[in-house]
Length: 199
Length: 199
DNA sequence: TTTAAAATCTAACACTGTTAGGCAAAGTTA
DNA sequence: TAACTTTGCCTAACAGTGTTAGATTTTAAA
Image 1 (tube, each protein chain N blue to C red):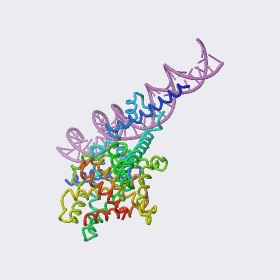
Image 2 (cartoon, helix red, strand yellow):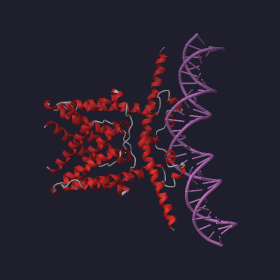
Image 3 (tube, chains in turn green, cyan, red, purple):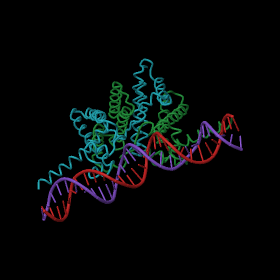
């Protein structure tokens, strides 16, 4: 019977509707505001219906995570074609990764557990900026006088911070627990940036 | 009256109790499991009492964030004393930052919005590992044959990923919106690592 | 000892994820 | 067509969440 197929297709449709409704809510109000009843409202159903498509709320997030990884891989594959040398391809793939994170900000957040809290608080409290200032000043100190300007030091500061914070985040979310590699990556990165400042 | 002071001290005590109870719960069950009633249970009060010390749940998290930054600054200051050269001091401060993140994992999480989701899911789904594999293979390709071993490529992969993911996280949580600096940091970092692989 | 104030509680509201049970429409079989 | 089964979807509920209002008890001041 063809009606079976049609029904199957309708079911698949609402499954996709649930996913895109969830993503829409995240885009509009953030992941914290996502609720089963809100999703149900968007697709003109009541909340319990969702449980016929997904085991629970977490399963929705997991599926969106999976979709995110698939989309990211596609983007990277396309980027890879833009260059012929392996070095160029690698760089293009990382740029694709970068662009994906901002083009699909909400997907990236759910994929890698990046929350947005304390958004406005940063400017308010002086305690918050002290560690940054300490590092900033020290970087300024080791920067040769001829290129000692705010923009340069900012750049170096963020490079430092990115490596260290990135490595920490990866460890905290994925618990790699590969102690040796961490140590070496960290030391590599830090001394690398320090050298790039000095010469 | 000295009793006023004593009462003041008691109030300050329960304020600190609320904070340390919250941190304890986060350590035991994670931030998601933190609730006002659980905090109240730990300090032998009922939930509404907490609102005489903090405006709401978010205010507790904000205060813990502040405490985190203060503690981090202290650690970094101490680390700074361990070296005499500015380069050594800078490295020591970043190491202190690194160590802080793991010694006070829960504080770091609340400070920088690092969540732990999809912990176990990573091994299950092949879609999840495809982007990583693509990059890994490409790094292997540009690695000179004499040092082409798993450990070396792992190290380079994590160095790459750390910078890029770190920079993204910083942007997503703090919305710096300093386009030029981002671009330069990213390009600096990527080409830097690529060069470090090739020579 | 009475009165004022402070500390603390209970009860409730509106929300959350999730489950159980029922009702009505649709499909299947006799 | 009639009876029966399945499916789709809903309402109601449970236990939990953050938060507030109001009553109640405890403490301090007169």
